[in-house]
Each structure stands twice: as structure tokens, then as C-alpha cells.
Length: 235
Image (cartoon, rainbow, N blue to C red; front, side):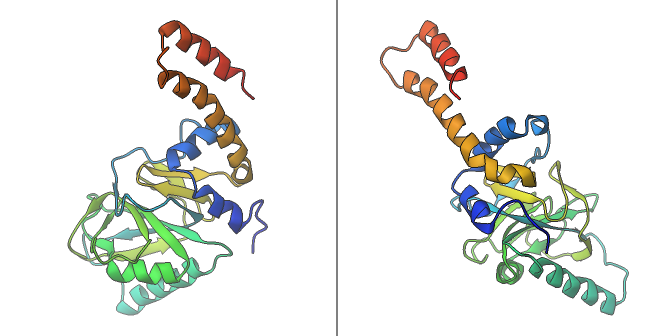
């Protein structure tokens, strides 16, 4: 297994904050990543009430608009190989699947069965530009951030796995850390994981100066300028 500069407990701790807060902290820890590494296209969350998910990426590609053209034995081998791949992880995972069809979401890979299977394999949820279904029957606590909801499988099948992919504008590689919630998803560089809690604390203390002023009876533009200057001096 790889030697990670963080623990499963570090990943679990990041689930206490929503994904926008994680993005705010990343702006401090890895400012060069400010313009990329997160989803930028419309998405649908399976359950907006679920807490964020955070785990090691298990990446793959799929299609659904037409049959795979492979022998049934090959389709079966790819699918079972995928299950082995997802299960082979030292920590909880987040599945990241790119739908390669010209019209992504033509067929749903995710539903009652696959959410239960992947949760049992150690995945907390999925991020995909494809579709999902069975909204009332998904495995409890399993979050899906997808491109759309669709009632049919169509010809959905895995193409390959353990690849560099792009989902909803977010590039992702095997074993990268992915944090996601109803706002979307972001990739966290390994070296940044353990630094994020302190950065979040700093962001929170800086924002509090402005928020406290906004909640007070003495708000004015002049005081806002002072508060912004004060916030910049907090370290």
C-alpha cells in the first residue's frame, strides 16, 4: 500500500466541513490550485441532507448509449475487476466515474443495487457526469453527485478503470483525495490534507470579523473597510 501523508482519521475529520469551506482553505494552503481541481458544471445531489464525503478516488469510465461490443465474458471480467479495484484501498473511497457518451447520462449505472454494492466495498459515494436513479432506494448514507437523474440502465457498461479522468470539469486521478457534497466536489492534494483544519480555522476567524459587523446595529461602509483591513491582519 502507498505511504500516505495523512490517515483515515484525517479524511474523516474533513467531513465536518462542507466542500466550499474546503475550497476556501485550499486557496490558502495551495493557492496555485485556486482556478482548477473542482467541479464547474451543473450537478444533482442524490440527498442534499447528507454530510460530505471524503476518500481516495477510484476512477473509471463508462458508456451507455450502445452495447459494449465485447463478449459477455469480457464485460463480466471488466465489471468484477472493477469491484476488486474499488475494494483494494487502505482507506474509505469516493468513486469518480466519467461517462464518455456524447450525451452523458443516457443510462444509469447508479441505483439501488450499485449503491449498496459500492458502500459494502468501502465507498462513501460517487461523483459522476453520468446519471443515477432509484432515489428512494439508494443505500442509506451513500451520496451521489451526478449530472442528471435517469430512469433507465440503457446499455450501461464500464469501459475501463484506474485512469486519469475528467468529471464535471474536475480532473481526477487514482488515489487522489476527493471531497464532495451538495455543492460539488474538489480534489485535495495529498500534502494539503493535514494542513486544512488549521487553514479552515484561519478562514473562519477572518470571516467572523466581517460577519459580526454585518450582524451588528452599527454597520457602515466605513466600518466594513476597517473590518476587512482587520481581517487581513489575522494570522
